[in-house]
Length: 49
Image (cartoon, rainbow, N blue to C red; front, side, top):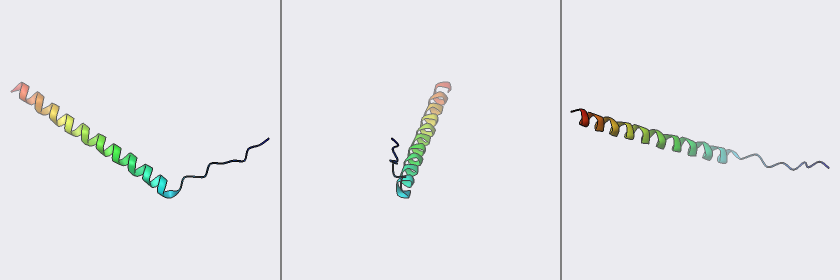
């Protein structure tokens, strides 16, 4: 017995939404890294001086 049931392919808006979400998360992560690295740099600089 063969099951020919297939899940419908995701529509274009769904794919677009997923890519937008991934891009947003990536940008947030990048921003967080930049801010934290700047903060750490300032902290090290203040410790050295």
